[in-house]
Image (cartoon, rainbow, N blue to C red):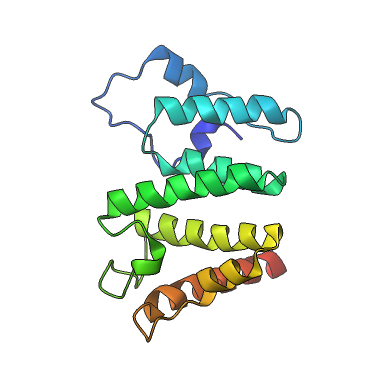
Length: 167
């Protein structure tokens, strides 16, 4: 997998001049199994060169979580949640979200990235043994205020289970 494969589209518009260093970085292969430290450094370099690109930070938190570096995973997850909320125009504190905070139905773009990242925080909390917080993330329903958010997360969890079973 090349670093550029993390993006659905070219990370810069066609009118932008892409610096040589970024062009080279985007062509670098990512291989966590062969060279974990190199892959981490490539992702950190990409994050510095492409601020605000959630895909890079999402790849980082997944890498940290899979390698049991939960503190780094949670820190990166919190960065993604804050950036996605800023880009999506809704509050960055998931505990304050409600049905009017965003269009949770048919979530896409930064809203979908936010929900996936919130779900990831729940899984990392489970791996850390913080069951209470994981449950709060997964099933929080404050008198119906965040029912859509909780349902959207449950749907994403279900999608992942189905993919894992048939994948």
